[in-house]
Image (tube, rainbow, N blue to C red; front, side):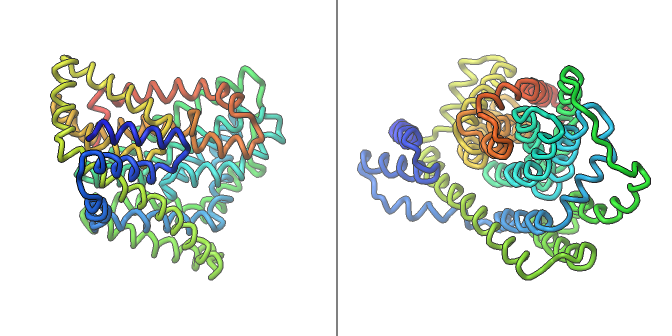
Length: 418
């Protein structure tokens, strides 16, 4: 039954059927051929949504959307220019540092790519940056958002793999920062070769006080989230609600730009993003039921450990599978599909599930800026008016950085600090 499900699923994907509908189609075909009632789909469709921690997903999305619709982006870019704009390739450095800071607010690579791309790519092109390189910087750096808490993919992995979301959030900070530093080095190297200019903010550090004053409350969002979780003050779901209240208060009393129209737009955007994520979560529940009933995770773990006798070979194989899958599936869908399977395999070789979660998110995030379906790749290329092939060639230094970070956190358990 599993073979039929997988075959139909990939056939439907090849026909450009949306991922969630392809999942349901594959499950339905498998049930029909095996002579089992389709009522199973109705029974299992809503089971994954009956989880209290799942409420954290829409509330964290809403908190980030409220922040992004206000003036925070302007102050964020100015602070980044003050800190790194004076280096070679200053605007590229600003894009990466901005993504590190923005990731602690949005938790979404797509939101980051859209917000930072629209703010910085046109300016970079005007300053003489090749459009493909400007798109490459934005497409790759925006994926840092899926590591810096509050990260939506880490929440999803915690839910499907039964791993502490708090531990995942804390462990995600270091790889996010390392990825940011590595990409900044790549930008500096390319900028030095191509003679790209610096971009210091007029006024220098004299302007820092006024800029940091306004940006500081929003920049404290990830500190607020991690601190509240780490000290046991609230659960992830409760913190997500507090984050929405925090965003509203900042918009009303600090930035003073929170209008009914802005709140409405944020609610609509959050509803659309949540609906897309929840549909994938619901559809993945039917596939997980089929695989669990046929004991696919246990069979896969037994086969892998018997075939690849060394733990490092198993880890390498998992990474290769995730790299390939990430090129064709969006990150949330890939996490929901592979998470339950790979946790069983990881347990068979003693792999820490938190480390596995970081491996999975780092790995699958590379697929966001890799053809043929890289979301941030297409968004950034569209903003820069650059061809996908040109942007992909400009991404080569960033692929190298991402792979090196992935290998480090895959094979050095001590880096997984939580």
